[in-house]
Image 1 (tube, rainbow, N blue to C red):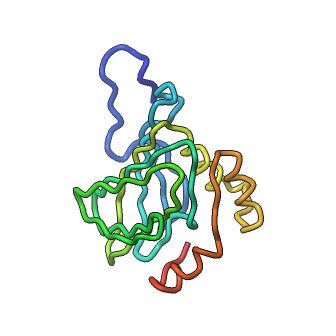
Image 2 (image 1 turned 30 degrees about the horizontal axis):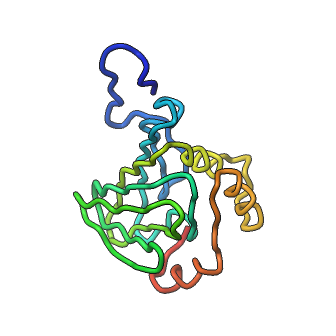
Image 3 (image 1 turned 60 degrees about the vertical axis):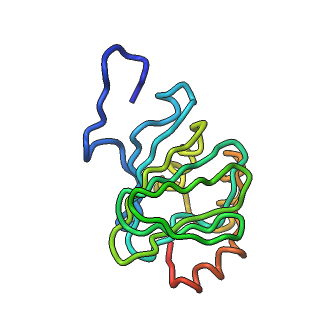
Amino acid sequence: MSTGTSGPRVVRAGSGDRTGSAGNVDRYLLESAGSGGRVALVEHVLDPRVLAAPLHRHHREDEYSFVLAGTLGVIEDGAEVTASPGDLVLKPRGRWHTFWNAGEDELRVLEIIVPGGIEQLFRRLADPEFEQVPEALPALAEQYGAEVDFAATEPLLQKHGLRF
């Protein structure tokens, strides 16, 4: 979606490009290319006990997770919290974090990314051409100014009975 055209633009409910597979879907409402790089908006939809990503940090973007439905679990720089519909969770750049569906119902989160850019990594990870093996992810994440920590993710998976 481009914000440079005249008149209001609407991304209708249910529309927007999607990536992912059943249980972990991203819907792209506004990508950085459509906002001059200023912001990206991505809706994450996760099944119960699904971890969105390994523990990671990025150095270019701040993320804000607004919970639309369900229960969001977040770990950010070692602190763990849950959030409910209407809550906003701040995840500043440079800090280790991840999130998951901590409830028994579908989780829907609006991810606000400022400035935009890292949403392109989400697309690359969902590309069937990308072989999602642990050895490939660190190098790909680095291309987007991000790092992943699989060793620190494993205890989180065990503690909460999560899956990717």
